[in-house]
Length: 340
Image (cartoon, rainbow, N blue to C red; front, side):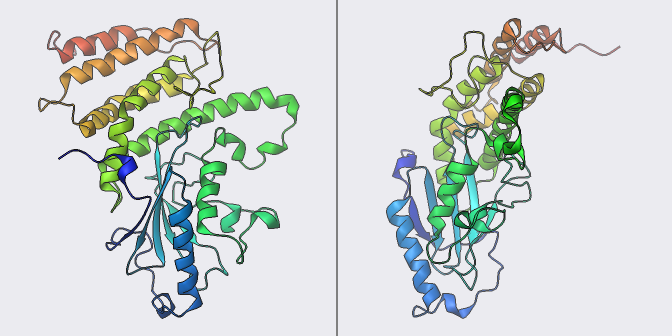
């Protein structure tokens, strides 16, 4: 049977199984099942707004027996360190909705990859009244909707330069803007790395009712993610801009921190294996050939050190030899040396 493409999934869908939802154990009040109540009608209105207006990068599941619950996923946009990632949110409508905003939980897997998305699942946003903001930015019972919340997360939170969402950053003088830009670049390295780690966890434990969607998404984007990681690690492309028409040009290359290269060197083999396995291209032998491709990837990315522009020195002079040893070992051409 041919695998389903992500474009073939319903962007708004009603499902039955609400198991695994963060707020499933929340007590349900009768007003949610009373079709004559104002709350029931308001949530049905929210459903209709979502069904008719969701952008192609957001998918929502609602529950037939629990209209107070909802689960949404946002696809990371090109031009950001979150591109090709999936970001899941469990949503709860309070019993006095819309007088109070909905409550959101972000599936972080323990990673904080954004100033507004905490590793405990907290979503910090003025529209949710979980962060300070102007009156016009806060929840308005008469006009605000869950669609606005999702669009705000997509545009304002999962953005090109999330470092500038950190409290107090906007208050810095323009005289130190160059230093802030460097910090923003380093922040994007961490954001991209943790997006990859989140993707790895999603491949292992996809949220309920989104299992096939997650597999399809990473089957379609897997090669793109691998190639993008190679370009970022080598310093040939600024993070977020692989195959992006608006990519900033740089004749001298992009500075890459040693922390980022070390993170990706240690993590990428397992992640790339998971992507290839999901795509069905690994052999039953464990993918030894792909191990070599991953090692070769890091040999090539290490060559970018000759063109470094940030003045950092290599902490590992024997890195090339180490990787070549791994390649030989993968083919059974070299035995592991015994420690004396």
